[in-house]
Amino acid sequence: MKRACIIGAGFGGLALAIRLQSAGIDTTLIEGRDKVGGRAYVWQRDGFTFDAGPTVITDPDCLRELWALSGHEMAHDVELMPVSPFYRLNWTDGTVFDYSNDEPALLREISRVAPQDLAGYDEFVRYSAAVWQEGYVKLGHEAFLDFASMVKAAPALARYQAWRSVYSMVSHFVKDEHLRQALSFHTLLVGGNPMTTSAVYALIHKLEKDGGVWWAKGGTNKLAEAMAGLFERLGGEIRLSDKAVRIETLGDHVTEVETESGWKQRFDAIASNGDLMHTYADLLADNRRGQDMAKRLARKRFSPSLFIVHFGLEGTWPGIPHHTVLFGPRYKGLLDDIFEHGVLPRDFAVYLHHPTVTDPSMAPPGKSTFYALVPVANRGKLPIDWGQVGPELERRVLAEVGRRLIPDIDDRIVTKFHYAPPDFEADLGAWKGNAFSLEPLLTQSAYFRGHNRDDKLKNLYLVGAGTHPGAGIPGVVGSAKATAKLMLEDLR
Image 1 (cartoon, rainbow, N blue to C red):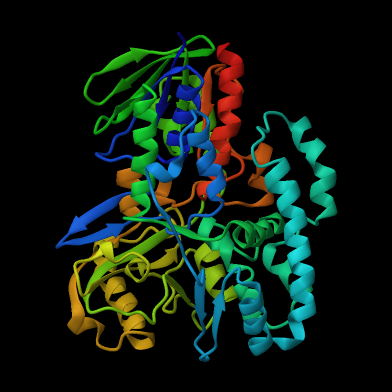
Image 2: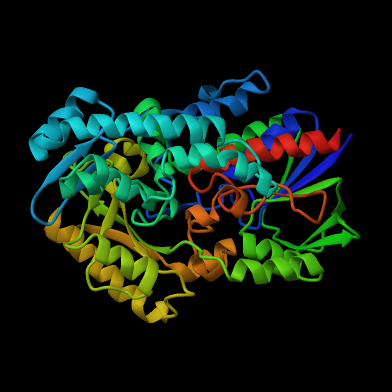
């Protein structure tokens, strides 16, 4: 029986582990933290459940497929709850826009905010459906291992003007600035700048429109736990709280994994769901391939980081939906500050997560759980002392939420804490504290991302946000499908 090891129990690693174990490969999953989920971590404080996210689950069919591989049903292990509206968008001029896949309701919103753009929105929907078919259905689960595969995909990319940005393409169809932002901000949820991320990412609109937006009851980490439970029932082994520290090699093959506790094991194949730089610079530090790849990766653009304030409040807010985006007074200027200039601006946009409006179990009775997320530059571009800046930024973020939604927020806070770029670096091995791996530029997509199978080390594989198609649950689950296909072919 062939044996495989996966380093990192994020959604990509979990999905790959399920696929391999379902196919009869004896698989071991190694995770340095005390819980599975990777970025989808969870904290329990003062009776509140604080879920790290990702808070948006789309394309649930890609998850159900993992259970179906062994004849099981996902619904037996985790309940997905529909979220509607998907997002409430709130601008400083008082404009409010509820974004959902309820077509009549969405068209009413567009008619109210930008009636002149109804026809343009319809054209954008057709464009989104076309790039979804090409970029997600046809290419989303394929491994781009050589440049020829990129050349083969080039005509379709050219046909849909992939060199343009999402914001540029949206602006081609609609003219109202509110609607342009409403149809382009989604790339921020996968670490991309709407002004520079390839227009192919407009497929997210189609993905949400068809599959909806969902929440895992009890928190996103419950989905990760359910995946781990399925994997273990299939016979897989999970090692928690034991960080991988080294991948041994012999010639052009990887042979063995060593962990912090001193545990060592030989495997026929090894896959990493860890940060790309961590995989090559740290786990393969003694290997020439690891050193060379670390130098190459250091020249690439990594995504921004995040500053997240988790807080529990007295009271309930049925009028605040599950997801709210509080846009700031600037859009492009703010994005430039984060992605290009690497400064911490005085203004910011806030992504507010309010799970208790959908799932009251996330807080004690009569109380509410929130988090307020602000994109910030990674530590490579913004090398500040977060120990000093963090408390002040936390105060400013809460003040903005209070000013725009909850006036007496300070009096209602029961508990709070924040999570900053150094935490991404320390807890997840994320290089420079990045939150989404490589920035999703066209020049860092498909063949130009991490390859699902290493070019030199023949039985080393990659899975997760650093590989094609990128970050987000559908992205990393799709990468697991592509990587599993390669591994199963090679292990036969």
